[in-house]
Length: 112
Image 1: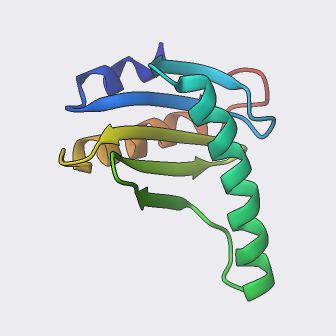
Image 2: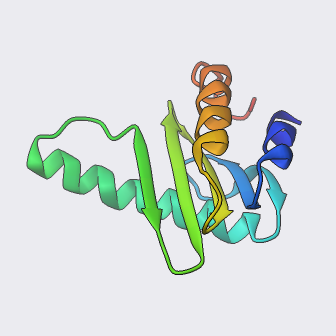
Image 3: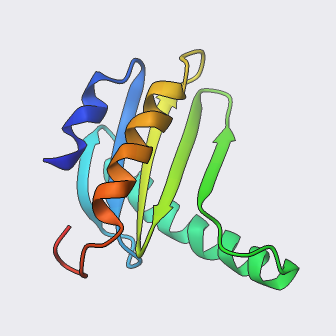
Protein backbone atom coordinates (compact mmCIF):
# COMPACT_ATOMS: atom_id res chain seq x y z
CA UNK A 1 0.00 0.00 0.00
CA UNK A 2 1.30 3.42 -0.94
CA UNK A 3 0.20 5.08 2.30
CA UNK A 4 1.95 2.68 4.67
CA UNK A 5 4.73 5.27 5.05
CA UNK A 6 2.22 7.57 6.78
CA UNK A 7 1.76 5.04 9.59
CA UNK A 8 5.14 6.15 10.97
CA UNK A 9 4.12 9.83 11.22
CA UNK A 10 3.90 10.84 14.90
CA UNK A 11 0.35 11.74 15.93
CA UNK A 12 -1.23 10.57 12.66
CA UNK A 13 -5.00 10.24 12.92
CA UNK A 14 -5.69 9.44 9.27
CA UNK A 15 -4.07 9.54 5.85
CA UNK A 16 -5.77 9.29 2.46
CA UNK A 17 -5.33 9.12 -1.27
CA UNK A 18 -8.55 10.31 -2.87
CA UNK A 19 -9.77 10.99 -6.39
CA UNK A 20 -12.10 13.72 -7.57
CA UNK A 21 -15.19 11.66 -6.65
CA UNK A 22 -14.35 11.85 -2.93
CA UNK A 23 -14.07 8.09 -2.46
CA UNK A 24 -10.84 6.94 -0.81
CA UNK A 25 -8.55 5.01 -3.09
CA UNK A 26 -6.46 4.17 -0.06
CA UNK A 27 -6.71 5.16 3.59
CA UNK A 28 -4.85 4.57 6.84
CA UNK A 29 -5.94 5.36 10.38
CA UNK A 30 -9.34 6.23 11.79
CA UNK A 31 -11.59 8.57 9.86
CA UNK A 32 -10.01 8.02 6.45
CA UNK A 33 -13.33 7.93 4.58
CA UNK A 34 -14.48 11.19 6.14
CA UNK A 35 -11.13 12.85 5.48
CA UNK A 36 -11.19 11.69 1.85
CA UNK A 37 -14.68 12.99 1.15
CA UNK A 38 -14.08 16.34 2.81
CA UNK A 39 -10.68 16.91 1.18
CA UNK A 40 -12.20 16.28 -2.25
CA UNK A 41 -14.93 18.78 -1.47
CA UNK A 42 -12.46 21.29 -0.03
CA UNK A 43 -10.24 20.96 -3.09
CA UNK A 44 -13.17 21.78 -5.34
CA UNK A 45 -14.12 24.82 -3.28
CA UNK A 46 -10.56 26.13 -3.02
CA UNK A 47 -10.04 25.59 -6.76
CA UNK A 48 -13.15 27.66 -7.47
CA UNK A 49 -11.89 30.49 -5.25
CA UNK A 50 -8.43 30.31 -6.78
CA UNK A 51 -9.81 30.40 -10.32
CA UNK A 52 -12.05 33.36 -9.60
CA UNK A 53 -9.13 35.23 -8.04
CA UNK A 54 -6.80 34.35 -10.93
CA UNK A 55 -4.40 32.71 -8.47
CA UNK A 56 -3.68 29.60 -10.54
CA UNK A 57 -3.91 25.96 -9.59
CA UNK A 58 -3.97 25.05 -5.88
CA UNK A 59 -1.32 22.49 -5.00
CA UNK A 60 -1.33 22.52 -1.18
CA UNK A 61 -3.93 23.03 1.53
CA UNK A 62 -3.20 23.23 5.24
CA UNK A 63 -5.28 24.24 8.23
CA UNK A 64 -5.31 23.90 11.98
CA UNK A 65 -8.28 23.14 14.21
CA UNK A 66 -8.52 22.85 17.97
CA UNK A 67 -7.48 19.18 17.93
CA UNK A 68 -5.83 18.47 14.59
CA UNK A 69 -3.76 19.83 11.77
CA UNK A 70 -4.73 18.82 8.26
CA UNK A 71 -2.26 18.93 5.37
CA UNK A 72 -3.06 17.97 1.80
CA UNK A 73 -1.25 18.01 -1.52
CA UNK A 74 -2.94 17.92 -4.92
CA UNK A 75 -1.24 15.65 -7.43
CA UNK A 76 -2.90 15.45 -10.83
CA UNK A 77 -6.47 14.24 -10.32
CA UNK A 78 -5.69 13.08 -6.79
CA UNK A 79 -5.37 14.55 -3.31
CA UNK A 80 -3.08 13.09 -0.67
CA UNK A 81 -3.89 14.20 2.84
CA UNK A 82 -3.05 13.61 6.46
CA UNK A 83 -4.70 14.55 9.74
CA UNK A 84 -2.22 14.88 12.62
CA UNK A 85 -3.04 15.49 16.28
CA UNK A 86 -2.36 19.07 17.26
CA UNK A 87 0.96 19.58 18.98
CA UNK A 88 2.81 17.17 16.71
CA UNK A 89 5.19 18.46 14.06
CA UNK A 90 3.49 18.21 10.65
CA UNK A 91 6.76 18.23 8.70
CA UNK A 92 7.08 14.42 8.59
CA UNK A 93 3.55 14.20 7.16
CA UNK A 94 4.23 16.97 4.66
CA UNK A 95 7.45 15.32 3.49
CA UNK A 96 5.80 11.90 3.14
CA UNK A 97 2.89 13.40 1.21
CA UNK A 98 5.26 15.25 -1.12
CA UNK A 99 7.14 12.02 -1.90
CA UNK A 100 3.88 10.16 -2.48
CA UNK A 101 2.61 12.95 -4.74
CA UNK A 102 5.48 12.29 -7.11
CA UNK A 103 4.34 8.67 -7.40
CA UNK A 104 0.67 9.34 -8.15
CA UNK A 105 0.78 12.43 -10.39
CA UNK A 106 1.05 10.45 -13.62
CA UNK A 107 -1.27 7.57 -12.77
CA UNK A 108 -4.18 7.04 -15.14
CA UNK A 109 -7.60 7.13 -13.48
CA UNK A 110 -8.33 3.90 -11.64
CA UNK A 111 -4.71 2.80 -11.28
CA UNK A 112 -3.76 4.48 -8.04
